[in-house]
Image (cartoon, rainbow, N blue to C red; front, side, top):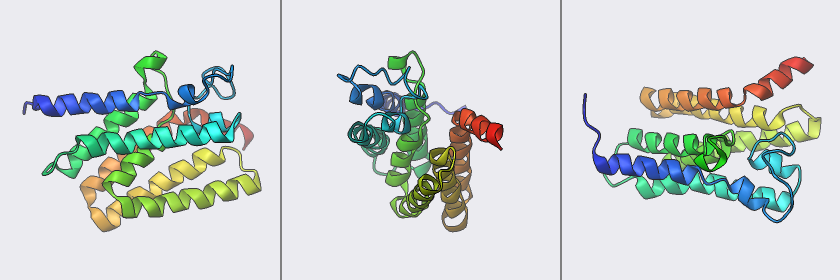
Length: 196
């Protein structure tokens, strides 16, 4: 088994800690609303949006930014894209299992979008455009779980783009991220099935 260099482990930990910053909780400070107990109980953008658009935008910027900046700061010249993906996973896992929230957290979509944007900005833009279209359509047509549908569809599309234009390894890692995010949305799927 190959030993992992200490600097890589340290950067991995830094990505996890960056991802663990609970921007949804911070954005709701001073409102009297504990986002972990209000609405869906999820400390993320969509739940904050139920209470405040401006605070939801702050949450989105923070959650997306921490995924993007964590990978950007830790990925060194000459590092493989695979290592970038691993740093990205660390940030997303930090968001989903934040030690500041007793190892609970959000669902990882905005943070993973930041990772997507830093690793493959062009393909990420295409995937995020799909998200925007589906999210807008879902809101207009009153789809149940429109956010989850748009988010996971964007990651599925990104995975297809990786498979067609980049390579199998990136497609496999992207698929793993998509499956992890889908698992984090299991309650959303249960809600959809309950109303089907």
